[in-house]
Length: 177
Image 1 (spheres, rainbow, N blue to C red):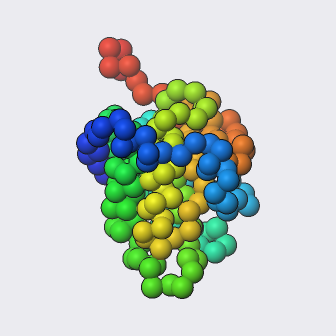
Image 2 (cartoon, rainbow, N blue to C red):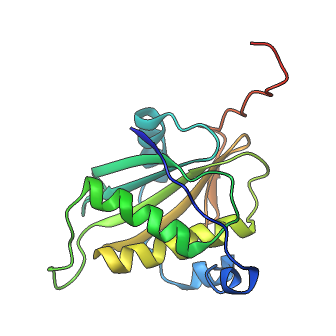
């Protein structure tokens, strides 16, 4: 199910504090996926994300999918706080809070389908911050942040990737279908 989420723009100074650099993400101790290709292919087949679509998934202890949701945050200024709120809204919709647990047993993974190169950008940093903070607030372990571009998929912090699945670029509105 795809849900549109409005993400208002904020000031640059506050927004820059709500982002993570790739080295900071790698040093955060994010648990590795045993088989990232299997998780990514499963999410791709379930949600068929178009560019500018986020898929948040919750995995159980054996990396089995417990719940997932896809949504489009829109083309607005990247802000980790806004992305965190969008992720929390989706997590609350598909999974009850795990805050009562002494230690998190489920892991949230974020797959973001976007256009462009597969290298890190400021928007990725905002999604990383948003995922980490949403997991803390929702009582989940923070799992990998994955991008899906026309070049394939990439798991940040692990430097693992593959060519398939890949994002299908959005059609040019000036072209006839």
